Amino acid sequence: MMSLLSVENVSFSYKKDVPALKNISFTVENGEHIALIGPNGSGKTTLFNLLAGFTRPLIGNIKLTGSNVRTFSPPERAKYIALVPQGVKINFPYTCLETVLMGLHPYQRQIQPESRQALQTAQTIMEQTDVWHLAAQGVTEISGGELQRVLLARALLQVLPTGWIGTGPPAQGRRLLLLDEAFSSLDIAARIKMMKLLNTLRALHCLTIIGIHHDMYMAFRFTQRILALSKGFLVADGKPDAVGNEDFFAQVFSVHAEILPGKGFLFVDTKDP
Image (cartoon, rainbow, N blue to C red; front, side, top):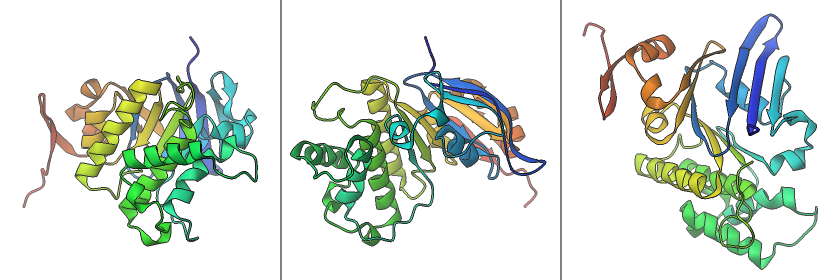
């Protein structure tokens, strides 16, 4: 069976002779929930831009369902891949509802009024992400955490346009959601709720999710697989329980971790007081 995504010996550089990613290879199957982790500057956002088709690898190939991701036109690619980037700022005072409805643009003509069905679908997803009460409010007037949930709702509508209220057959695979620190401004309760929502959608619609995380608890608690980058290299790829050991945290993050069986891990400061 063909993989959803295939990354084949990919390298990338912003400057000559200064590689940002070095010989990266892995495959992603339909319905996986993957955490991409690593120190700042390890190449995580660069890899996301390559996966989304925004930039071209210096060496190697990235294939979506067997075809080079760059051969898809941007509107066609947007039907399969949605990216929530980090640090997004929207300066034009769109309402939150208008912002979420932008997720339907790949499926619409350039000038087309929103249907009752589209509005009902947007309402459902905004209720699921706890932002429906902000529908009429401008995105320039909401908090950073609220904006992150609005952008998540837009991305989910983009990859699951008919998967919410029975308006058509649910999407079964071939949909990839990329989340670049998408929950960094959320409180712990909201993070947990959004991660549970993602796993529900993954199970219902075979949605594939790759999220960049700096919150190790979220990465190891709610995802099925860990990909770790360090200095541009892929240094770990496996299930959370198999990857998360003392050697891993020392190698990737240069920290000492005490592993608590069945409970997770505790980062220990080994420096003298």
